[in-house]
Image (cartoon, rainbow, N blue to C red; front, side, top):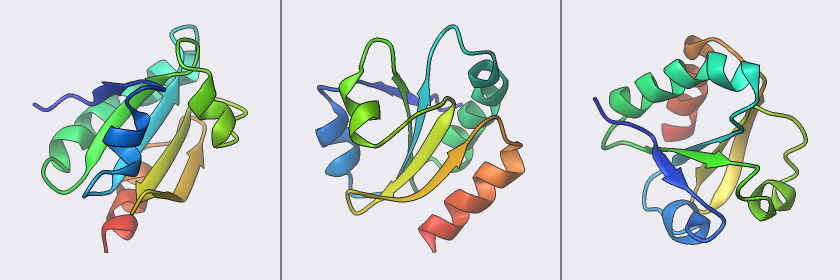
Length: 108
């Protein structure tokens, strides 16, 4: 099983913006209940999409600059980046099927 990668304000540019493949970024925090609900789906997608896209997690408490830059106002917020730019956004704890559908659309 492939785990999502942990990214930070410092690694966001290299891991997400400069990525050759689309990236799903989960903006989360340890105290966030809905973030814990969506975490297993995010982890499962990391395995299912391994090689086709990256799945990353960014702790908003430890890394405040990136969420501010992308207008993240509530968590969990999941942004899909393609070619260095956000192409889709999902806010809240949604079923894995919703995230999977959005990722597949971004990959097509």
